[in-house]
Image 1 (cartoon, one colour):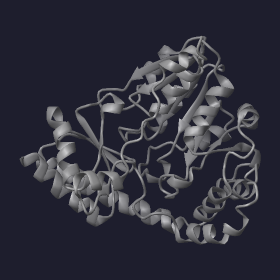
Image 2 (tube, one colour; image 1 turned 45 degrees about the vertical axis):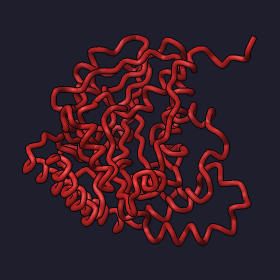
Image 3 (cartoon, one colour; image 1 turned 60 degrees about the vertical axis):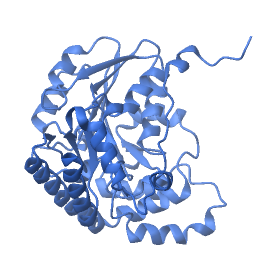
Image 4 (tube, one colour; image 1 turned 120 degrees about the vertical axis):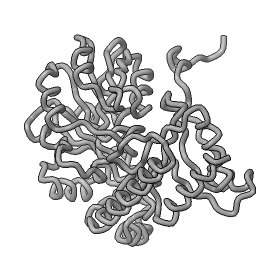
Length: 364
């Protein structure tokens, strides 16, 4: 009899990475490829982070600081939270995984908006939890009223990506506060704020307000997006110590590497770089939305660093035509939105190239 893994593991779809930019360039005969598919920071990392990385090369033969002490203290000062209100992960992906392992038992409920970040669903599958996927509203926002109505005695974790990926939409402070008033004590609400630094809206809620108020709320943030450290994989969660303690118990002792810790602490100190990133993104979103209106394309107003554009039945063709012109975007198939494209903002030159290529692709 062959050795078998747990039965439900075979129901999960493994992550299948696409071709690298280099492989795509070679297969298509391109000399250049503009990658606007992964919500990365086109400015790259802060010069301070790069300098810190070089200076840390002499210590990479030593094991990392398992407590992330320097980064923990830096974030504690930055946010005005006690040091024991943080837990760190190899990107937010690992934190999603760890919270599932720590909290979910077979038959428990994990609630999320649909569509939203796909790793929430994977956490439910891995831990044999019931996925409670609540459709977004017609304007592509989390339907908080429907989510509150759907909570059961077995619902354990509830994810709200704010802004949401792949739609870029947000829930307002008033909506979130009404929602939290309805949440029973046995539910842990996780506010995934991976795109927090990009939001410029007066009614956008800061999840830390609810952490400070003692709610059953945990906030995820990351250095992968606005801080430009996606390749180093480092994210963090903030919440009351008793909510984070189970995660500390199940995480690996050295789950965040030394270079990631060093670069993140340096990047945090360079808020001018974050401000430049935010301004560049706002300029890019304005260009994209104006182009969509001129081209007669519907789009979803975004507060993240990407725009979701409706391409209709020809969406796959438009994606391929863009690729043949050296522009890599993301189709919405993985999100269950096959008639949409998601494109993140780039440099001014890259953004202009995308708009020109999009107009050409639509004309064919």
